[in-house]
Structures are given as structure tokens and as C-alpha cells.
Image 1: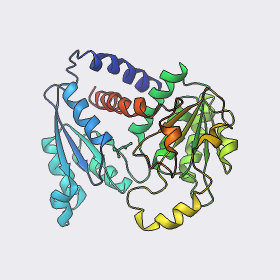
Image 2: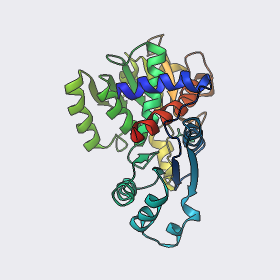
Image 3: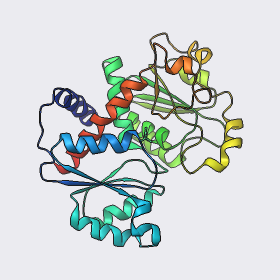
Length: 291
Ligand code: CP
């Protein structure tokens, strides 16, 4: 994780100065997306181009997948055409099948369980803000969703202290919390799941939130809005955090729900830098799987 974050930073400098990279020269990268995306899709497409490859966008609803062709058959065919597959899917199992049957590296661009490339870009943003990762404290406030799960795992790998504050019934996945704790033991990090957002942010270097209703959960909107009342990242909550804490959001943000406009647009927010960093996290991930 530390080397992926370091490589993301190096690629940031290289891509910003328009110095060419041939890491994906002659490679075709397929982006198979079952869900909408602004940042992840565009960053992977542009990262592919910046590394000398060609992106091929595959909207799942335009493939025979949408008419019942099995994932494993689709994977076998795509594996014959593509060098890398980037998948944004509902079920984690779809990624597992894509990897098993395509014979190609598959990058998770968000599943219902995890959003690992988001976490790489997020850790780059924390490193830029705090100068290091090891020993820094990240407080996640809100839904224990795929983004939260990946921050727990990535933070544990990087030796960070990660706290997640979620309402009852919306905690991060217990098997991933156990995995993150076991990783943290080896790296000197720590993982805590707490109830009160104020407890989570009290010693935070970074305060992070995400949407209360993820893609595919729209029917639960009313009950989720009730459950997450009290979990908004606002100026009152930020008074409980150290003055130097940065505020993060993986975006898209819903101002007035999980975060206020004042905090998202405020001096402590690094959300826009975090958004740009997705390009470099994507580039480092692509480079990693083809090296
Ligand atoms: N943060 C993130 O994954 O954004 P998109 O849904 O726009 O890709």
C-alpha cells in the first residue's frame, strides 16, 4: 500500500508535467461498468491514455450481459481482446468471476463490498496533507459501506489508526473489520468501530464521510436518512476535531445530508484535491497490474 501511494505521487508529478509513460503501451484496458461514475470512469480512461494504452468503455447494460449472458462467458471473450479489465459492479463475485475466467488482471473500480482504488487516492491525499501515513489517524463518519471497508483495510496496511463511527445496523462489514485488525497488528496501526462521531474525530488528522444512500440502496432512502441523523460532518462536529484536521469526501457529495456546504467548501476540505488524486491512484493501479 505504501509503495502504491508513493507511486501515485510520482505519477502525479509525471502526468502533470505531461511526461509520457509507456507502461501500458499497446495495451487495451476494458472498463466494464454496471453503475454510473464520473470520477472513477474518467480517471481510469485518462490514466490509460497517459500511460500509453487505449481505454474501451463497456456499459454493462449495452452488453449481452444485460440479456442474460453469464459473467464467465463474457469474461472468457473479453480476456481474448483486452489486457486489463477495470470493473465497477454490484456483486464482488462478478469481479471474482471476471478474474477467474478472463485470465487478465481485474481492478475493482467499486463493488458493493469495497472501493480499493478510491482508498489508494485517499491515502495519497492524506500523505500530501500530513507528510506521512504511518501513525496518522483517520476518522470515518457515516455509513460503513464499501468506501469505509476499503479505508479500514488500506489504513491498516499503511500502519494508520482508523476509526469508523456508524449508527447501529450500518457498521462496516465485520469480516473486513477483523481482517483490517489483523493487518493493523502487523503494521502498528489500529482499527476501532465506535458509535459516537465525536469520539471518532477527537484525535483525527483526517475526517472522512460518504453518502448515506449508495447506488442500489435508493429504496432505503427514508429510513437511512433517519438512521444517519447525527452523523453529519458539519462545523459543530469539526469543533470536536483537532484544528489541523482535513475534511475528506470521495464524492459525489450531498450538501445538507452527510456534509454541510460550509464544511465541504471550507478551508479544511481537501475533497477537490482528493478527486484529482483519483487519476494518479488509477494510474498506479494500472501500472501495478501490468508490471
Ligand atoms: N468517488 C467515486 O467513486 O466517484 P464516481 O462514482 O463518480 O466514480
